[in-house]
Image (cartoon, rainbow, N blue to C red; front, side, top):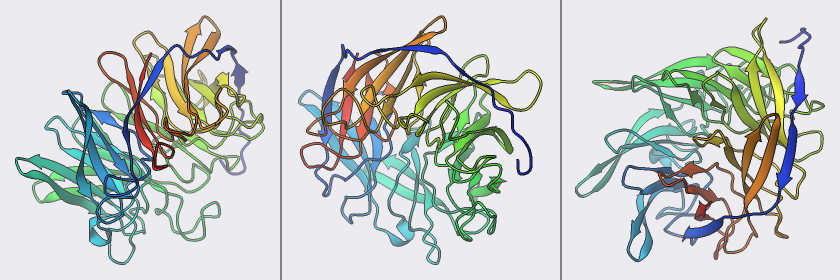
Length: 402
């Protein structure tokens, strides 16, 4: 991208705002900040039985973070800590949440610990048994070409390989990177008889992206297709990429905003949807990227531009429902005087998108700062986490019933 002029087509679709919330929020668990966990940065996933799984950055038996499960009982939701990270070789500070395989095993990353020299984090697996859960380390990042500091969750491709990103590592010296930390990587872990083998799929150079904080996207065919970087690209403020190719460089003066932190989702026409955390108005946007007919880049459309009272600073990815509506979160703003973030819905109608605030967090017992996105259960209810707030200020797990 260096030395090239990047043509960016940005169209602003007409959008409307409905600040009325016709939904109910329930707090399923309030973290104490102690042994049960503290500050869930990542979101939650559901298994087939409706149990919720997630991570907290801190707390647990060693104050280095946890993997937890919430089980629905007749008396309410009960939390069980499946693993408390001990730091060192065990890993520490799991930021990106966990994913499940078909056998009920959990996979995730830590942003610290692991390799004794680097302490750059690792990839782990938790396997259930009759007596508890057993943790295995699949890969320790060494901080060099294989990457360092994974701040995201993992995804499976269609053949059972794991993919993720590291915020640093890769190429040791590029002008857009931080000192010699590297601009980050995309990695692949392949299961084998003797363990898992890591392959670095891409090392960012800065001009094709820098600091990929978001999880990658798997398309309908089971291929890992794309992602975002917070920095880098033609203007230095973030990119949307398909593996190895910078497809769109965000710009601080463009209506589509800059500094994307969330993952992308795709529709059946291969259009991509995501969020930028900053925009010329300062509150961030929801965007749509469509493949350009005559070139490798994307055309960009703004579906919604946040103003503050309807939400501010979206940093997570989005999800679709079966009717084509989009759902997401913002970490600030909202209709409540606490300005502690929102859960929102975008409904398409022709060229219009109407935003509905499903919940505005107060910063009190209902939580504050939902950094992760939301997930659906089979009944269409939404589940997520807040980083802070709750009765003890250590975050909550919540349910939104539309």
